[in-house]
Length: 378
Image 1 (spheres, rainbow, N blue to C red):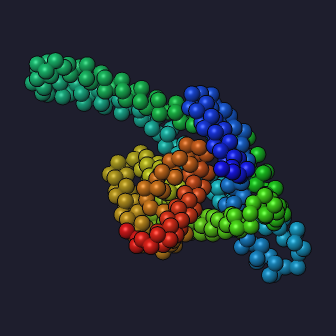
Image 2 (tube, rainbow, N blue to C red; image 1 turned 180 degrees about the vertical axis):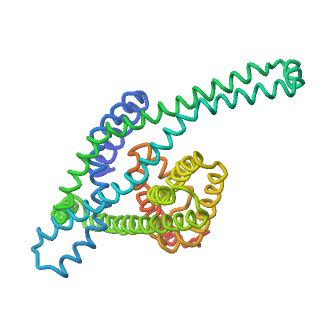
């Protein structure tokens, strides 16, 4: 029986793939370390590509306005659009940081000042219970416990826990400072991508048509168009939804006279950009800020945010974002978790529409196969 050369190629490629897979499974630590180093090297460029993709959404709008109302040349329009885009984003970030960070610092200072009094109150409360209810001590002794030891354990836990919280905060701050260099490289790389995006697009098309069959090359371009559409819709929708939710939060806090209305509303709106976990983080920080002033108002603030999230999730978010993502909630959580572990905040933003693209392509392929087999959708 004649063996075709093409079949031999697939056979040898499969053998090589199995050998590499077996070797990788036997050297997981080495492969993991190698992949971690590769991701560490490529992370600024991957982050830069993500920044360029995000910035391209407002950039296109600004370019359309400048082309319509000015007589600038193409390169001048591109440069002005890039400057306005990055300057606008920088001003938004500066406004968020200058609005929220001072209040956070003030809150941590107040908490640090109130720690000794709080611990003293806990000790006094524990001692008062022992003196007022001596039978509790006897009952604990019968059960093998000691109220004094429990009281001391609680006090030590509070001391160590709060100290650990402050130490963790300092550690997070130092980690953010160390990430500045990576961010700078990523921003510079994103500038290069945006300035030459048409040229890069033509080069990608040439490579696809040169090395792939015509049908596969066109399919790749179709997938790229779907990806661009989903990412653009997701980014625009998330930004609009974040502004709307932040405004609702401000109105609610003003009506109920909660403190730090502007700072917390800005923080809530900004963190809402991150699906699922962003709103939780913003709510926790906002409640911590209000807790220093009034614990009762902090509880009321949490209840208000929960109500607003229900309104947002059922009425506002579906109308603003619509079907731009079209991803079930469980896969949104998986995408946010995986993206955050790989690329931090940028990963959380990018992996949700990326997972939506994969979900859309998989759904399309499944439906296509079912139609070929004449099977009705289940």
